[in-house]
Every structure is written in C-alpha cells, then in structure tokens.
Length: 349
Ligand SMILES: Nc1ncnc2c1ncn2[C@@H]1O[C@H](COP(=O)(O)O)[C@@H](OP(=O)(O)O)[C@H]1O
Ligand SMILES: [Mg+2]
Ligand SMILES: [Mg+2]
Ligand SMILES: [Mg+2]
Image (cartoon, rainbow, N blue to C red):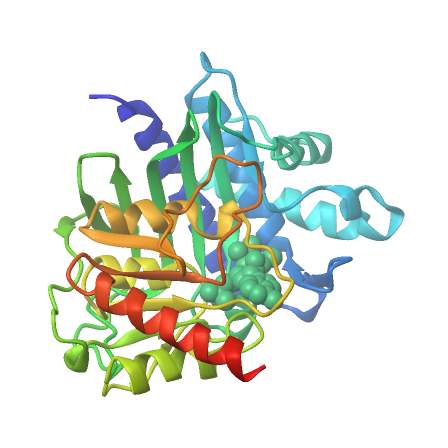
C-alpha cells in the first residue's frame, strides 16, 4: 500500500510532538510565550514540536528527499535574546525523544534543534513530495488551555495524500453543540490516507476506530463549528448563513485549531464555516491535514465559490472569501446559502 511507512513515521512524529506540547501546556510559564513579528503568539512548544517532527521524519525516512513546509522558523532563536528560549526548547526536545526509549538516541545540540526547525523552509509546490506542518495549530487555544492540534500532511505532486491530526485536548467522545461528553478520556489522533478512509485513535495508539462525517441532510438538525477567535473568522457572517439562510437551530461550536476538522470527521457537527477578515491569506499548514481527515471521512471541503482547496501553490492557500466544509448532501444547500449571504453583503456595501 502506498505511503505506509510515511504514515507510520507521521503518526510517530505527531504523537511525540503531542507529548512535548502536553508537558508544556501543563506547566506553561509566562516565560514560554513570545510574540513574532506578525504579533501572533509562539511558544517553546511550537518550536519544540516543529523540531521533534522534523527530526523524527528525517530519522524514520532516511532514503527519501526531505522537504518540509512548516510555520515556524529559527530567526528569533538565533538572536542573543533567544538563547535562553533555545536552551529550554533543546531540553524539551531531548526529554521528549529520550522518553521515546529509542535505542541509542544521542542528545541533540542547540544547533541540531535550529537545523531541525529550519528544515521547514521549503516553499512546497505542485511537484515532488513535501511535508506540511503546523507544529501547534491554535496557539491561542493552547495558551488558553483549550483546543489545539499538531497538524502534519504529505503533499505529493500538489495533492494531499496523507494527514495526521493530533488533538491532545479533544475528548475521545463527541463534543457536539451540547458540549457534553460522557467519557472523560481526552486526547485523539486522526489519520487518513488518500482512498483509504479516516481513523481516530487514542494518542498512545492503543485503540482505533474508523470515522465518518455526519449524515445529516436537514440543515435544521445540523450544528456548525467555527473559530473560537472572532479575529480569525467573521462570526456574524457565519451565523447569518447558518441560522438565517440554512435554519440551523443549534448555536455555533467555537473551538480553536484544526481539531474542528477532526470533530467534523467523526460527526460531532455537520458544518465548518471559516470567513477570514479582509486581507488575510490562509496558509496550507492550517488546512492540509484537516482537509484530508474530513474528505477521507466522506466530507467535502471547498472555498466559498465552490472550488476545491488547492494546496499546490506554495505556502499560501488562496480561497475565494472563505472555506466551507460539510457532507456531500448538505454542500449544495450550503454553497447556495453562502452565495446569497455574500451577494447581499456585497450589495449592501
Ligand atoms: N486574521 C486571521 N484570519 C484567519 N486565520 C488567522 C488569522 N490570524 C491567524 N490565523 C490563523 O488561524 C489559525 C488558528 O485557526 P483557528 O482560528 O481555527 O483556531 C492560526 O494558526 P496558529 O495557531 O498555528 O498560528 C493562524 O494561522
Ligand atoms: Mg501561528
Ligand atoms: Mg495554524
Ligand atoms: Mg501554528
């Protein structure tokens, strides 16, 4: 079966990175939080997760050319002001890798960690194979103690062929609009390979189950997910689409990160709406893994004009107005509702 060893390596890398993130989230000290030039937050866990994933993928797949498109870079860590942080990241990475119990693991130096982080400089594109990584998607959620995800996908000739989504704070049982969940076990890892469906397992891989998107055909029974952060997606546009146009009764479920794609893939809700504010350009690492996890579970992800998401154009994912995700049955209704709302908005400007 194609991509078997790549999937195994990706699951191992994401699970180890999740362990590092859980450790940091538990003991998050203010000193672990920095803000990047674009003012978005980044933590030692974002960097540590990227270093772990990069190191593990290279180690597990030695015979393949290695290309990684990842969110973080080592720029700030190479400055004098970043030295303390770099030491802390290196310590975290070594603790995590040593904890894996891999035979003959020799500790990484700070230079090894910088190099592993900077492996992520690839621009991706439409030819060859590129790993796509968001080491922590939902850093704001991570900082709040809420949802976040380690999102890793493989692009081959411009198409996403596998995806792994580790969601350390997502309960194993559903988080529907009532936000109740019976079991209290927390931490899931979703994985999908093109043509082979989507599975959800516990973070330690002890049990796995095949998952499918919600089969809801009646929008009134559908519930919808959107970003927790109103800065990331227009909440009033999505509510006018969902509640006014589609008649969705349930209130929106607002959670951070691509955990939304994982929740959708197992039917926790039926719709995901994302309408970034003007001028924002989506990145492929924010959607590649989530997209295949949902589509291999029977869902459809498109931009608001009905075009499939195109991950082949480098690190940006240019979409018309926004991203909409649902099942095959609801997509035509949703597209129509989105178009009507956007047209009304445009004519009222
Ligand atoms: N103005 C904006 N509009 C849309 N998305 C944004 C944004 N600013 C940041 N983001 C992206 O939204 C991602 C989180 O998604 P969500 O809103 O679903 O939680 C962030 O990922 P990171 O946390 O990896 O930086 C970031 O890339
Ligand atoms: Mg970020
Ligand atoms: Mg992200
Ligand atoms: Mg991120």
